[in-house]
Length: 240
Image 1 (cartoon, rainbow, N blue to C red):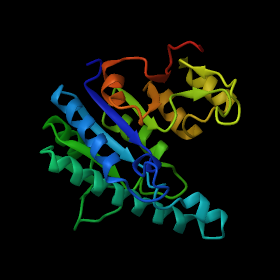
Image 2: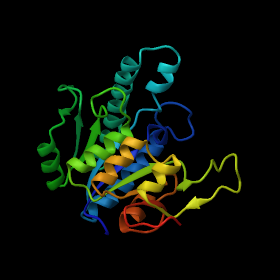
Image 3: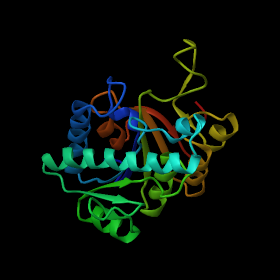
Image 4: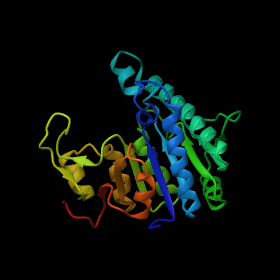
């Protein structure tokens, strides 16, 4: 494997598959199997999971709900996803810990940086729930923040697209897919990789980001092996 400690960012939408809402057990099972393959290769894996399949704070805010309240509800949704993923992993015999930024001691451990690192060193999958614990911050920013805190070598963002494009490939058949990008180019062109705060955090801490399609079986393992399965954003990359 090309990496020894990685952070995987899973969008909530990725967990719902083709259902349109909620969680598809088949999709979660497939993800769990790929994670098992990664662990068997000796990689330390932390996960940040979103909650968009259950509740989207930004959308609720646009409909009139108080933004902070909406974001807190979204954080709780991420914990639901984290617990679902934990259950799927533990059914495969994979030791897993859910750490939350909002105290929920009956169902998860509180997030403590040193505890998270110790779990990783013991070969446990660590799932970070409840975002950063603060409203107005996305789970993308949480992924960048946690990656820096645990000294992850890379952030893998698993989505429903196979990389970063210069325009929406759904509406523009001639959209160009990038193989590699610099942080500065992503920020300057406002490419929809992650939000600007997340990109800046990764840039400041020199953490590369790989964006790839979760829907392709085996892509998580391929990405951690260093294969070109999507778009790589990094300090020493060229725009290509």
